[in-house]
Length: 344
Ligand code: KG4
Ligand code: ZN
Image (cartoon, rainbow, N blue to C red; front, side):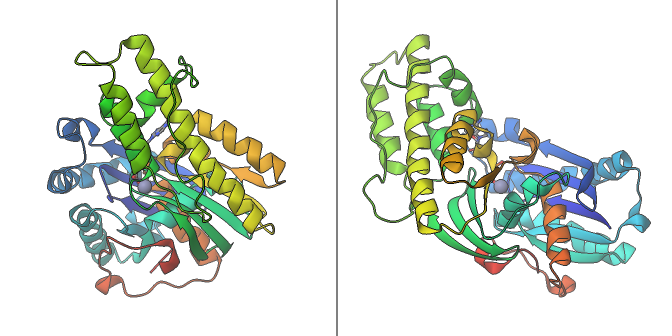
Protein backbone atom coordinates (compact mmCIF):
# COMPACT_ATOMS: atom_id res chain seq x y z
CA UNK A 1 0.00 0.00 0.00
CA UNK A 2 1.47 3.38 -1.06
CA UNK A 3 0.44 6.39 1.01
CA UNK A 4 1.44 10.02 0.55
CA UNK A 5 1.44 11.94 3.85
CA UNK A 6 1.23 15.71 4.30
CA UNK A 7 1.80 17.75 7.48
CA UNK A 8 1.57 21.54 7.75
CA UNK A 9 0.44 21.73 11.38
CA UNK A 10 3.08 24.15 12.60
CA UNK A 11 6.28 25.48 11.04
CA UNK A 12 7.41 22.51 8.96
CA UNK A 13 6.08 21.79 5.48
CA UNK A 14 6.47 18.05 5.19
CA UNK A 15 5.45 15.48 2.57
CA UNK A 16 6.39 11.79 2.67
CA UNK A 17 5.68 8.63 0.72
CA UNK A 18 5.40 5.32 2.55
CA UNK A 19 5.20 1.83 1.13
CA UNK A 20 3.36 0.16 4.02
CA UNK A 21 5.57 1.38 6.88
CA UNK A 22 8.74 1.87 4.80
CA UNK A 23 9.51 5.50 4.05
CA UNK A 24 10.38 5.98 0.38
CA UNK A 25 10.78 9.71 1.09
CA UNK A 26 10.23 12.11 3.99
CA UNK A 27 10.87 15.70 2.88
CA UNK A 28 10.80 18.40 5.56
CA UNK A 29 11.10 22.09 4.74
CA UNK A 30 11.51 23.98 8.00
CA UNK A 31 10.60 27.64 8.58
CA UNK A 32 12.67 27.95 11.75
CA UNK A 33 14.89 30.73 10.33
CA UNK A 34 11.91 32.87 9.28
CA UNK A 35 10.23 32.65 12.70
CA UNK A 36 13.43 33.06 14.71
CA UNK A 37 13.39 36.85 14.86
CA UNK A 38 9.91 36.71 16.41
CA UNK A 39 10.99 34.18 19.07
CA UNK A 40 8.10 31.86 18.17
CA UNK A 41 5.91 30.65 15.31
CA UNK A 42 3.84 33.43 13.69
CA UNK A 43 0.70 31.67 12.34
CA UNK A 44 0.07 33.79 9.23
CA UNK A 45 3.73 33.82 8.25
CA UNK A 46 3.66 30.02 8.61
CA UNK A 47 0.61 29.92 6.34
CA UNK A 48 2.28 32.02 3.64
CA UNK A 49 5.45 29.93 3.71
CA UNK A 50 3.49 26.64 3.57
CA UNK A 51 1.62 28.01 0.51
CA UNK A 52 4.90 28.95 -1.17
CA UNK A 53 6.49 25.57 -0.53
CA UNK A 54 3.85 22.83 -0.59
CA UNK A 55 3.98 22.19 -4.35
CA UNK A 56 7.74 21.89 -4.49
CA UNK A 57 7.99 19.78 -1.35
CA UNK A 58 5.36 17.39 -2.75
CA UNK A 59 7.11 17.13 -6.12
CA UNK A 60 10.38 16.37 -4.38
CA UNK A 61 8.79 13.73 -2.12
CA UNK A 62 7.27 11.99 -5.15
CA UNK A 63 10.50 12.21 -7.14
CA UNK A 64 12.64 10.86 -4.27
CA UNK A 65 10.17 8.00 -3.77
CA UNK A 66 10.18 7.33 -7.55
CA UNK A 67 6.38 7.23 -7.69
CA UNK A 68 3.72 9.34 -9.36
CA UNK A 69 0.14 10.20 -8.45
CA UNK A 70 -1.24 7.09 -10.17
CA UNK A 71 0.79 4.84 -7.87
CA UNK A 72 -0.78 6.23 -4.71
CA UNK A 73 -3.46 4.30 -2.82
CA UNK A 74 -4.20 7.06 -0.30
CA UNK A 75 -3.43 10.65 0.50
CA UNK A 76 -3.15 11.26 4.27
CA UNK A 77 -3.18 14.82 5.62
CA UNK A 78 -3.03 16.26 9.13
CA UNK A 79 -6.34 17.96 9.99
CA UNK A 80 -5.44 18.79 13.63
CA UNK A 81 -4.25 19.66 16.16
CA UNK A 82 -2.13 22.62 15.12
CA UNK A 83 -2.22 26.24 14.04
CA UNK A 84 -5.45 26.84 12.09
CA UNK A 85 -3.93 28.93 9.26
CA UNK A 86 -1.11 26.41 8.84
CA UNK A 87 -3.39 23.33 8.88
CA UNK A 88 -5.57 24.99 6.26
CA UNK A 89 -2.80 24.97 3.64
CA UNK A 90 -2.16 21.21 3.84
CA UNK A 91 -5.87 20.43 3.87
CA UNK A 92 -6.75 22.64 0.92
CA UNK A 93 -3.87 21.27 -1.08
CA UNK A 94 -4.73 17.66 -0.22
CA UNK A 95 -8.40 18.08 -1.13
CA UNK A 96 -7.47 19.65 -4.44
CA UNK A 97 -4.99 16.89 -5.30
CA UNK A 98 -7.44 14.20 -4.18
CA UNK A 99 -10.06 15.60 -6.58
CA UNK A 100 -7.64 16.07 -9.44
CA UNK A 101 -6.05 12.60 -9.23
CA UNK A 102 -8.93 10.65 -7.74
CA UNK A 103 -6.84 9.57 -4.73
CA UNK A 104 -8.80 8.67 -1.59
CA UNK A 105 -8.24 11.23 1.17
CA UNK A 106 -7.69 10.41 4.86
CA UNK A 107 -7.62 13.06 7.61
CA UNK A 108 -4.98 12.27 10.23
CA UNK A 109 -4.67 13.31 13.86
CA UNK A 110 -1.16 14.73 14.37
CA UNK A 111 -0.95 13.42 17.97
CA UNK A 112 -1.53 9.86 16.77
CA UNK A 113 1.20 10.66 14.28
CA UNK A 114 3.73 11.25 17.07
CA UNK A 115 2.55 7.99 18.67
CA UNK A 116 2.78 6.03 15.40
CA UNK A 117 6.20 7.51 14.58
CA UNK A 118 7.93 4.69 16.48
CA UNK A 119 6.61 2.20 13.92
CA UNK A 120 7.92 4.01 10.85
CA UNK A 121 10.37 1.66 9.16
CA UNK A 122 8.56 -1.37 10.55
CA UNK A 123 11.26 -2.45 13.01
CA UNK A 124 9.19 -1.85 16.17
CA UNK A 125 5.60 -2.89 16.88
CA UNK A 126 3.70 -1.38 19.79
CA UNK A 127 2.25 -3.98 22.17
CA UNK A 128 -1.03 -3.10 23.90
CA UNK A 129 -2.05 -1.82 26.31
CA UNK A 130 0.55 0.90 25.88
CA UNK A 131 1.44 4.16 27.52
CA UNK A 132 2.39 7.08 25.32
CA UNK A 133 4.40 10.10 26.37
CA UNK A 134 3.87 12.75 23.70
CA UNK A 135 6.17 15.69 24.28
CA UNK A 136 6.61 18.47 21.76
CA UNK A 137 6.63 22.24 21.48
CA UNK A 138 2.85 22.37 21.61
CA UNK A 139 1.86 19.33 23.67
CA UNK A 140 2.85 17.34 26.72
CA UNK A 141 0.65 14.45 27.60
CA UNK A 142 0.62 10.92 28.92
CA UNK A 143 -1.87 8.67 27.16
CA UNK A 144 -3.13 5.17 27.88
CA UNK A 145 -3.89 3.24 24.68
CA UNK A 146 -5.93 0.03 24.79
CA UNK A 147 -5.30 -0.51 21.11
CA UNK A 148 -4.23 1.53 18.11
CA UNK A 149 -7.04 4.03 17.89
CA UNK A 150 -8.48 3.86 21.37
CA UNK A 151 -6.70 6.11 23.85
CA UNK A 152 -7.35 8.28 26.82
CA UNK A 153 -5.32 11.25 28.05
CA UNK A 154 -4.39 10.33 31.63
CA UNK A 155 -2.11 13.28 32.32
CA UNK A 156 -1.26 16.53 30.60
CA UNK A 157 0.40 19.85 31.16
CA UNK A 158 -1.65 22.45 32.96
CA UNK A 159 0.28 25.26 31.29
CA UNK A 160 3.41 25.11 29.09
CA UNK A 161 4.41 22.12 26.99
CA UNK A 162 7.78 20.58 27.84
CA UNK A 163 9.36 21.69 24.53
CA UNK A 164 7.97 25.18 25.04
CA UNK A 165 9.54 25.30 28.53
CA UNK A 166 12.88 24.23 27.04
CA UNK A 167 12.58 26.94 24.39
CA UNK A 168 11.71 29.63 26.95
CA UNK A 169 14.56 28.63 29.27
CA UNK A 170 16.88 28.82 26.27
CA UNK A 171 15.75 32.38 25.52
CA UNK A 172 16.56 33.34 29.14
CA UNK A 173 20.06 31.98 28.59
CA UNK A 174 20.46 33.99 25.37
CA UNK A 175 20.37 30.92 23.11
CA UNK A 176 18.87 30.98 19.63
CA UNK A 177 15.29 29.83 18.91
CA UNK A 178 14.10 27.05 19.10
CA UNK A 179 16.53 26.48 21.91
CA UNK A 180 15.61 23.03 23.25
CA UNK A 181 18.25 21.31 21.17
CA UNK A 182 20.93 23.95 21.86
CA UNK A 183 20.21 23.91 25.60
CA UNK A 184 20.46 20.10 25.63
CA UNK A 185 23.83 20.27 23.89
CA UNK A 186 25.23 22.80 26.38
CA UNK A 187 23.80 20.78 29.26
CA UNK A 188 26.09 17.89 28.31
CA UNK A 189 29.09 19.99 29.35
CA UNK A 190 27.44 21.33 32.52
CA UNK A 191 26.92 20.14 36.08
CA UNK A 192 23.23 19.64 36.97
CA UNK A 193 23.95 19.98 40.68
CA UNK A 194 25.49 23.48 40.63
CA UNK A 195 22.18 25.29 41.10
CA UNK A 196 18.87 24.43 42.66
CA UNK A 197 15.51 24.54 40.94
CA UNK A 198 12.26 23.08 42.31
CA UNK A 199 10.96 19.87 40.69
CA UNK A 200 7.42 20.77 39.53
CA UNK A 201 4.30 18.82 40.54
CA UNK A 202 6.17 16.48 42.87
CA UNK A 203 3.41 16.31 45.39
CA UNK A 204 0.38 16.43 43.08
CA UNK A 205 -1.22 13.01 43.30
CA UNK A 206 -2.21 12.90 39.62
CA UNK A 207 -0.38 12.38 36.34
CA UNK A 208 -0.54 16.02 35.26
CA UNK A 209 2.46 18.15 34.46
CA UNK A 210 3.25 21.84 34.84
CA UNK A 211 6.24 23.86 33.75
CA UNK A 212 5.31 27.49 34.42
CA UNK A 213 6.61 27.38 38.03
CA UNK A 214 9.93 25.96 36.88
CA UNK A 215 10.10 28.61 34.15
CA UNK A 216 9.61 31.35 36.74
CA UNK A 217 12.18 29.87 39.10
CA UNK A 218 14.63 29.70 36.19
CA UNK A 219 13.93 33.34 35.32
CA UNK A 220 14.66 34.44 38.90
CA UNK A 221 17.81 32.32 39.01
CA UNK A 222 19.13 33.86 35.78
CA UNK A 223 18.35 37.37 37.09
CA UNK A 224 20.79 36.74 39.96
CA UNK A 225 23.63 36.97 37.44
CA UNK A 226 22.98 40.69 36.99
CA UNK A 227 22.98 42.83 33.87
CA UNK A 228 25.64 40.90 31.97
CA UNK A 229 23.94 37.59 32.63
CA UNK A 230 25.63 34.24 33.21
CA UNK A 231 29.03 33.50 31.63
CA UNK A 232 29.66 30.59 29.27
CA UNK A 233 30.47 28.02 31.95
CA UNK A 234 27.53 29.18 34.04
CA UNK A 235 25.17 28.85 31.06
CA UNK A 236 26.26 25.21 30.73
CA UNK A 237 25.57 24.51 34.39
CA UNK A 238 22.23 26.34 34.25
CA UNK A 239 21.26 24.33 31.15
CA UNK A 240 22.20 21.07 32.86
CA UNK A 241 20.22 22.02 35.97
CA UNK A 242 17.13 23.03 34.00
CA UNK A 243 17.25 19.90 31.85
CA UNK A 244 17.64 17.59 34.85
CA UNK A 245 14.76 19.14 36.78
CA UNK A 246 12.37 19.35 33.80
CA UNK A 247 13.06 15.73 32.86
CA UNK A 248 12.86 14.48 36.47
CA UNK A 249 9.43 16.04 36.78
CA UNK A 250 8.18 14.11 33.72
CA UNK A 251 9.82 10.90 34.95
CA UNK A 252 8.14 11.12 38.34
CA UNK A 253 4.77 11.14 36.57
CA UNK A 254 5.83 8.35 34.29
CA UNK A 255 6.69 6.17 37.28
CA UNK A 256 3.34 6.97 38.80
CA UNK A 257 1.67 6.02 35.51
CA UNK A 258 3.42 2.63 35.52
CA UNK A 259 2.15 2.06 39.06
CA UNK A 260 -1.36 3.06 37.97
CA UNK A 261 -1.38 0.86 34.88
CA UNK A 262 0.63 -2.28 35.71
CA UNK A 263 -0.86 -4.05 32.66
CA UNK A 264 1.09 -1.82 30.27
CA UNK A 265 3.35 -3.67 27.81
CA UNK A 266 4.96 -0.87 25.78
CA UNK A 267 6.00 2.69 26.43
CA UNK A 268 6.01 4.96 23.39
CA UNK A 269 7.89 8.27 23.61
CA UNK A 270 7.23 10.65 20.72
CA UNK A 271 7.51 14.35 19.81
CA UNK A 272 10.41 16.78 19.51
CA UNK A 273 11.59 16.38 23.12
CA UNK A 274 11.91 12.61 22.57
CA UNK A 275 15.19 13.62 20.90
CA UNK A 276 16.58 14.63 24.32
CA UNK A 277 19.30 12.15 25.30
CA UNK A 278 19.16 12.83 29.03
CA UNK A 279 15.43 12.15 29.00
CA UNK A 280 15.91 8.96 26.98
CA UNK A 281 18.37 7.66 29.56
CA UNK A 282 16.11 8.44 32.49
CA UNK A 283 13.04 6.94 30.81
CA UNK A 284 14.97 3.81 29.84
CA UNK A 285 15.97 3.23 33.46
CA UNK A 286 12.37 3.49 34.68
CA UNK A 287 10.96 1.30 31.89
CA UNK A 288 13.55 -1.37 32.69
CA UNK A 289 12.59 -1.25 36.36
CA UNK A 290 8.92 -1.83 35.48
CA UNK A 291 9.66 -4.44 32.82
CA UNK A 292 8.07 -2.40 30.02
CA UNK A 293 9.40 -2.37 26.48
CA UNK A 294 10.33 1.14 25.44
CA UNK A 295 10.11 2.62 21.94
CA UNK A 296 11.47 5.88 20.61
CA UNK A 297 11.14 7.16 17.04
CA UNK A 298 13.84 5.36 15.01
CA UNK A 299 15.58 8.64 14.10
CA UNK A 300 15.76 12.22 15.37
CA UNK A 301 14.05 13.34 12.15
CA UNK A 302 11.02 11.25 13.18
CA UNK A 303 10.85 12.89 16.64
CA UNK A 304 10.06 16.36 15.35
CA UNK A 305 7.20 17.11 12.96
CA UNK A 306 7.29 15.06 9.76
CA UNK A 307 4.84 13.57 7.27
CA UNK A 308 6.13 9.99 7.42
CA UNK A 309 4.41 9.60 10.79
CA UNK A 310 1.18 10.95 9.25
CA UNK A 311 1.20 8.36 6.46
CA UNK A 312 2.11 5.65 9.02
CA UNK A 313 -0.91 6.61 11.14
CA UNK A 314 -3.19 6.18 8.13
CA UNK A 315 -1.64 2.77 7.39
CA UNK A 316 -1.98 1.53 11.01
CA UNK A 317 -5.55 2.83 11.26
CA UNK A 318 -6.58 1.10 8.01
CA UNK A 319 -4.90 -2.11 9.20
CA UNK A 320 -6.96 -1.90 12.41
CA UNK A 321 -10.13 -1.77 10.31
CA UNK A 322 -10.88 1.93 10.68
CA UNK A 323 -12.61 3.66 7.80
CA UNK A 324 -12.27 7.17 6.50
CA UNK A 325 -14.97 8.92 4.59
CA UNK A 326 -15.95 12.53 4.38
CA UNK A 327 -13.05 13.75 2.21
CA UNK A 328 -14.89 16.67 0.67
CA UNK A 329 -16.12 17.80 4.07
CA UNK A 330 -12.82 17.33 5.88
CA UNK A 331 -12.02 20.50 7.83
CA UNK A 332 -9.21 21.54 10.15
CA UNK A 333 -9.68 20.96 13.89
CA UNK A 334 -7.01 23.00 15.72
CA UNK A 335 -7.85 21.53 19.15
CA UNK A 336 -8.17 17.88 18.18
CA UNK A 337 -6.99 15.42 20.87
CA UNK A 338 -5.91 11.75 20.81
CA UNK A 339 -9.30 10.85 22.20
CA UNK A 340 -10.81 11.88 18.83
CA UNK A 341 -9.09 8.91 17.18
CA UNK A 342 -6.31 8.60 14.57
CA UNK A 343 -8.19 9.20 11.32
CA UNK A 344 -11.29 10.75 9.88
O1 KG4 B 1 7.30 17.83 17.72
P1 KG4 B 1 7.88 19.16 17.43
O2 KG4 B 1 8.67 19.31 16.15
O3 KG4 B 1 6.81 20.29 17.33
C1 KG4 B 1 5.51 20.29 17.78
O4 KG4 B 1 4.67 19.49 17.28
O5 KG4 B 1 5.26 21.12 18.69
O6 KG4 B 1 8.77 19.56 18.67
C2 KG4 B 1 9.56 20.72 18.72
C3 KG4 B 1 10.02 20.95 20.16
C4 KG4 B 1 10.69 22.31 20.34
O7 KG4 B 1 10.15 22.92 21.49
C5 KG4 B 1 12.15 21.94 20.52
O8 KG4 B 1 12.88 22.87 21.29
C6 KG4 B 1 12.06 20.61 21.22
O9 KG4 B 1 10.99 19.96 20.55
N1 KG4 B 1 13.31 19.83 21.11
C7 KG4 B 1 14.07 19.48 22.15
C8 KG4 B 1 15.17 18.76 21.64
N2 KG4 B 1 15.04 18.70 20.28
C9 KG4 B 1 13.88 19.35 19.98
N3 KG4 B 1 13.92 19.69 23.46
C10 KG4 B 1 14.85 19.19 24.29
N4 KG4 B 1 15.94 18.51 23.87
C11 KG4 B 1 16.14 18.26 22.56
N5 KG4 B 1 17.20 17.57 22.17
ZN1 ZN C 1 4.17 17.71 16.53
